[in-house]
Image 1 (cartoon, rainbow, N blue to C red):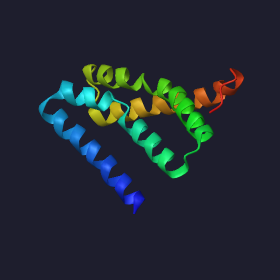
Image 2 (image 1 turned 45 degrees about the vertical axis):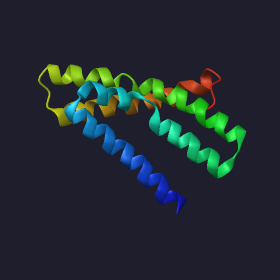
Image 3 (image 1 turned 60 degrees about the horizontal axis):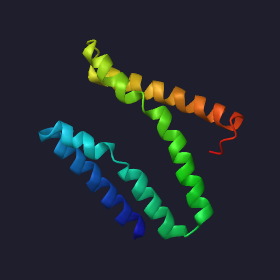
Image 4 (image 1 turned 180 degrees about the vertical axis):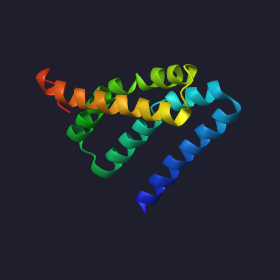
Length: 115
């Protein structure tokens, strides 16, 4: 039952953001930029485990995984301004993000960062 509650609340959040963005792109972007999914994830993890060590590891790793995802938000609009179709720009943005994630997974242990 808890799984379905999590799924419905998370899904409603995404639906709200996309609906707002259709009418108010800037406001939709503001809401989308909030780490709502991360906050929901922390709340769900805490309610299910109440484990401070697990929460610390999760939140710390989330920080390091956010960083390689940020260039995607610059690459997609740039590619579209250059005439690239949306789906191709999205694919390029996701591809670059995957490569940056792999780089982070490779680099993090060398810097003493636990993921």
